[in-house]
Image 1 (cartoon, rainbow, N blue to C red):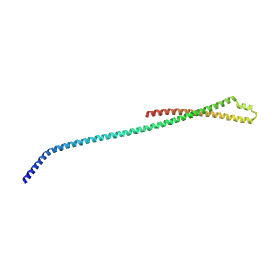
Image 2 (image 1 turned 120 degrees about the vertical axis):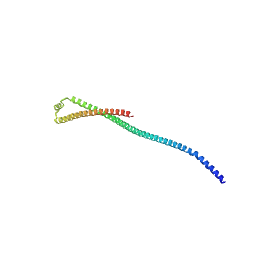
Image 3 (image 1 turned 60 degrees about the vertical axis):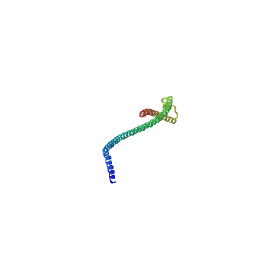
Image 4 (image 1 turned 180 degrees about the vertical axis):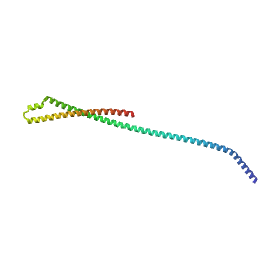
Length: 196
């Protein structure tokens, strides 16, 4: 039995040795293939990592450019809104200037008409009104009062003339401001259209 056991043991040992002998030959081949595969996987990982790093850098660069572009767009949009507000203000000012110009023209025309009536009355009285009054008056107190009235009348006429001249100057300034407002409004429209 011992022999049998020994024979079976030797046979098993021989089978193990035989089985391990080709495995030792294949093992280095498998190990080389595994190492080659591992190297290929590592190379692929390194390539993918590099590509991913490049793509992340490109994405960050593009994100920065998008942010810059958005800031520029926001800045231009704000400038367009400011120009629009300035245009609305200019239009409002232009309307106010037109209304003031119309009022001043009406007032100026009324003053001119009043001055024309006073000049007509003075012409009808004649050039030597004070001398005529002096010769026609019998009462010196009435004469003094009448001459004072004529002095007031002449002062008022002089004041009206100065007032009309001042109104004309103011009207010319209003017309100039109105033209400037129109030009500014047109320029603001052009700039706004260009910015859009």
